[in-house]
Amino acid sequence: MANQYDYDVLYLGSGHGTFDGAIPLAHSGVKVGIIEEDMIGGTCPNYGCNAKITLDAPVALTREVERLQGVVEGNLTINWTKSEAHKQDVIKGLPGMIGGLLKDSGIDVIHGKGSFKDRHTVTVNGQSKTAKNIVISTGLRPHRLDIPGTELAHDSRAFMSLTELPKRIAIVGSGYISMEFATIANAAGSEVTVLMHHDRALRKFYHPYVAQVVKDLEKRGVKFIKNAGVSAFEKSGDQFEVHYGDDHTLTVDWILDATGRIPNVENIGLDEVGVHYNQNGVEVNDYLQTNVDNIYASGDVIDKTQPKLTPTAIFESTYLFKRFSGQSSEPIHYPVIPSVVFTSPRIAKAGVSVEEAKENGDDVETNYLPDDWYRQVDNETMGDNSLFFDKQHHLIGVTEVSEQADNVINTLLPAIEFKFGPEELGRLVYLFPSISSSAWAQL
Image (cartoon, rainbow, N blue to C red):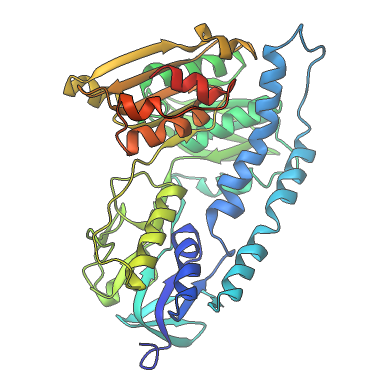
């Protein structure tokens, strides 16, 4: 294949939608190229998941010490500057590590911005690179409000690079990024105000559980302004003013625009080659194929109903590896993909939602988690979950709010994906005592 073209497969972007599949693809003998204009590895390793969870770790620790006061003497405080430095120590080697894996696999990595010239050709740095198949894996970028003074606000990447934490922070939006960063900044000592576009935060999660997180953050000093209607940002000396509602003004030291993320579909030549896309991303079929049959898409840039998360991108990238290497010609069949918000407590879910379960007439079991003996070990005082079963008592969905929600969902995920019944469930014996054994006991 590569005799006619420079590459068998050429990827635009080097994130999880690319490298998890590109590496084994190259090892299978396929000639692979990657074009990347920013950091190798994309958002998640460099200024997304890995950075965020490192900044969250001290928050989780302070929460546990807080719950165990009296058993543990003394309070902890977060040194933001050192936490940020620790985060940088954790992630700084990732681009080199991923780049090394790509190089060792024989993959050509071309630094620059790629743009389609035709269906088999991408122009980068004034040169043309050709490929039999091309994969669009350009991901998402932060949305910016179209209001006066929008340039005065910052994005999530800038927040996670702050060496000093501003005293007063305004966060516009109430989705994943807003709620997670509000939790982190508040725990580290900042005065946080969240200006909501609607009257509910985290609208894709079960509202009563979200309400518990919001109530806890309010007790800790986070202010939530519902239906804020932010209209402008303005600089006032060393401070900034957020104009919202009916002539209201909020004065802060730093503004985070957390109003969502949008697909990187502009200025890469999609119109020139006729690839269909919309405001949600690149349109693909069940083979991750665009309407131009040798051009595919992978990762968060796709317009899809599946969650735009790292695990989804990894699965898609691996699917394309199997397709391009000839190991499979089947359409993509997504597994159950869990999602979590790293607030404290966490909110996590997988499979059928609360609303779907009630609508379908499935069996719903709810648990108040502080009643569980294992949760009393570190004195959890809040937390609930809902488990959904079909008529054969197969677990088909779960959602939980608790300090251990992410670990519980991971534990229960195989039961949902593989439709374990009572017999299969009885064959699984977890380490005891552990959160896994406690979660499994609920089934």
